[in-house]
Length: 372
Image (cartoon, rainbow, N blue to C red):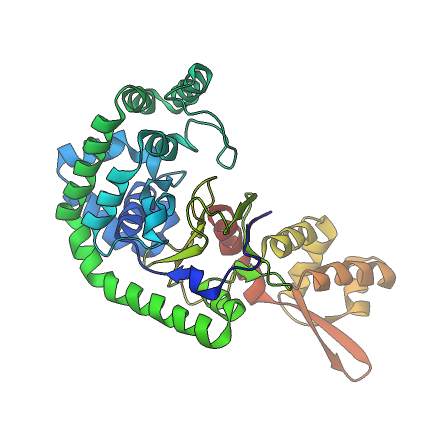
């Protein structure tokens, strides 16, 4: 359960940290469409949604599948343009100019890639030229509802018109709310990008990735970046067609999401949050699975009732639960392996107690895991 990016032999200078205005705008649109994903932004999402003019709100609904349950690659057009060297634009206008430069096949694939087209990481014919690919795109759009079907038909029939419509939508969003938001966060994002570039230069990639997110790590041999996600995928940062490298895009409002762009023929991009609630870092998905499985047994659930209140010895738990001491020890071993209990010695007794901080974190670990 991870996305892997092959970087074997990639020079450090090919790793780019830089803010992307269009990516942050699409993140903002995602937060407005899915406020439940971002409880820390409740005030902003409520105020912004209530202030949208009806026409703009209607148009956002028309294209919201581009940034709701999935996150379309239209937010990072630089990743498909070799001459950008993995650099987003400095302004939203520059990013939109890059979006305009995508050819129709790339633009349509980016807009339909997850919502109503072929599997994201698999190459195939464009629905603009292949009848079967077009049929499949429209079938999937139909399953998503009439708005998306209408959008998909328009997109397939006239990509330039939809491209112009979408640019106008982004420009109207900038005027309505994003310019103010970007003015507040751009300095923070630029500072984060500079800091991580300096960490990369001075301490190496493993340290830089550790500061990006606990979900992003480097393999021991240094040949792959691994992003801990429920989805799976693989990409190469060495594609000469688009330019070797990986781009890291910070987001001020993206938590808890860590998005990874790894479409074939596109430069890999990791879009990460720069801030998170003041809580312990999220557990890995393997550890989360281990903890949920440990708590799924009825006897261990009963045991936790005692261990949450105080520290107990094995013998005390055996008496309280009316089971044998060896059986208690087996259950304790499972809970301990999952990191759910702490132990300490008191004389000749070993006392066990539930780690309430870890258990309290399970809900948010699960939410972050499935949203990451």
